Every structure is written in C-alpha cells, then in structure tokens.
Length: 399
Ligand SMILES: Nc1ncnc2c1ncn2[C@@H]1O[C@H](COP(=O)(O)OP(=O)(O)OP(=O)(O)O)[C@@H](O)[C@H]1O
Ligand SMILES: [Mg+2]
Image (tube, rainbow, N blue to C red; front, side):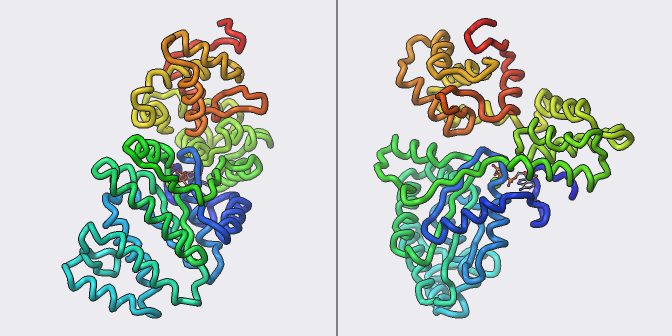
C-alpha cells in the first residue's frame, strides 16, 4: 500500500472498521442512519467497506451528492441509480419512457432521464421508489448518500422551501416503505447546521429523528498502529523501535488521514530510507504537518468553517476555542466560559453554554466524565494554539 492521504483506497487497504460496519448493518436491518464524524476520519471508506460486505439480497447504492443543485437533480440521480435494478423486472423502463416523452431529458450514466418540471419532483420520487415494492428478490435497498448536507446547503441557499420539502419527502418515504428502503446520510458538514438554518426560516419539523446517529470515530489504536506498520513495511521504512507504530498512531489521534500524511512526508526525505525511523523523525514530520503555513494537512479549515457554522456568534466562538486551546489540561466549562467572557463580557451564560455544546457537536471539544472540556483531537489543538499564537495557561489560570 502506498500512502494516499485523501484519495480513494482499494478495498484491501481499508484498515479496521469491521465492528463499525457490522453494527451499521445490524442497525440498517431496523432503521436508517445518520453517520456523524469529524471530517477526514474515514466516513466515505466506512461506506465503501459496508457496501462490499452487504448481504446479497440488499441493493446498496452509494452516491456522492455534494454537488447536486436541486431536488429535481437529486431525483434524477435516484432514478439513474435504481434503473439497473428496476429495468428488467418492472415496467420502470416503460414508465420512464412515458415520462420522458413529456420533455427531452438529461443523460446520467446509461440512462436518458425525463426532464420533468420542478413541481413534479416529489411525485416522481415517490413513484420511482414505489416500483421497488413488487420486487421480492430485493429484500432491502440502502441509499448511502454521501455529502447530503452540502446538497441541502446548496438547495437551501437558493430555495429554502425546497430543501425543507426534500427533507420531509425523504422522511415520508422512510415511513411509507419501512421494510424496503433504508437511507444513510453522511458528510463533512454537520446536518444539524442545515436544520438549524432552516428552522430560523420557519421550518418546524424534525426530519431525521427516526434515524439512528452513529459516530465514525478515529481508528482503534491497534488498527491505527497496524496501518502505520503496513505503510512502513510496504514502503521499505524500518522502525527504530517496536513501539514506533503505536506512538505514531497516538500522536495523530489514530486518524488514518494523518497517518497516510506522516508516511508520505517520511518518504519525501531520503534520509528516512537510509536509517531506521525513530520518534524524532516522526515528530519532525508531524510538527511540519501542523506548523506549516503551507497548510499541508488542511487544518486551516478548522478556523475557516467557523464563519459558515457560527455566523454572528463567530467571534465569541473563537474566544471560547482560544480559551480551551490555551489551557494545558482539560478544564471545567465554567472556567472556560469565564476566560472567554473576559473578552466578551456582555454575552450571557446561556449563550456560552449553547456555544460550547455546539462546538462539542462539531467535534472541536469533548467533555470527560467530570464535565471538563478539552479539544477532542490533539492535532487540532496543537494547530489552533500555533495558528492563533496563543500562550499556554495552567488549568487553574496562571500563565
Ligand atoms: N479505514 C481506513 N484505512 C486506511 N486509511 C483510511 C481509512 N479510512 C480513511 N483512510 C484515509 O483517510 C483519508 C480520508 O478518508 P475518507 O475520505 O473516508 O474520510 P471522510 O471522513 O469521508 O472525509 P471527508 O470529511 O473529507 O468527506 C483516505 O483518503 C485515506 O487516506
Ligand atoms: Mg467523505
């Protein structure tokens, strides 16, 4: 296996995830799922692994819909994805043709799709899914819709009503076809931000409360260490000590994306191939990945996205992130708020609490059993401290 940070891996190169994939399948026997995770933790590859292992009488359709611009276009993709499964066993092809006769349509893959008018998309979606009912050989159809929140964001920016209707239509379909269809929503943008935005515009529904939320955490330590070891071995890197694989995995929070980056950076330096790789060499490439204005690990995103996520509260949000990042250890929420409040004294306690919960939901923070908060990922914390030139403070308050 070659390092491939951010690329698409061969199935054999997707390490670990077996118990998560098994749990996903178990859940999908009963209900639909929202897969939540921080970006780059490996959601897309979990979907790939699930798809490869799904039961034979399940049809699993995986589609990245992040660039879809309207409900009509979305429905066209659903039709195109179902077409190979429906054309032989139902009157779907005839139905499609009769629909297509109304207007010329778009070519998606092998199918020429009808260019139905915007008003009809909901009806067409319902009719398309209804064609599945008669097919006994298919026990279940699972739609894996990657980057669905981005699609909703794009649609909502032009037509919030359409985004609301699409969410409701999908929920209604899950209820009408409770045995046959399942949906998995995932993406690098939290769905809760989209729903929050729509609620501010009058949306009152809870569009995913029938779906189970499952988190894609980083890899388990043994799997992450195994990934490091395999990348080392396959690329002729020799470990100076046996624990170097585990140490490397831990230093990047067991996130496979950074592991691939570390090995890629080691290979860039010919010295790594000439002598065994030790902790110092690994730490040097991690430090460069985090502390470099070239932004090689794309960490800049953690600050940039606050603009879209937190809108008018962005400044307070940055103050809270700074307060927590600059603490050496985890700290009680009240202390974190007190520090942030020193910068914005007029913001009330409730708003700070809501912000801290939102930051937790967006995977910046995590709270331990005692209720103390800290950054969830050390890589992000290290970058935040460096990028924002923060001075570290003891948990009690002394610099
Ligand atoms: N199970 C795995 N084994 C090995 N490497 C992995 C695994 N999962 C992810 N990776 C590495 O991490 C990178 C990012 O993974 P992936 O694209 O699945 O993450 P994602 O959560 O979908 O990211 P995004 O939030 O950008 O959509 C991959 O290109 C690959 O380098
Ligand atoms: Mg992805």
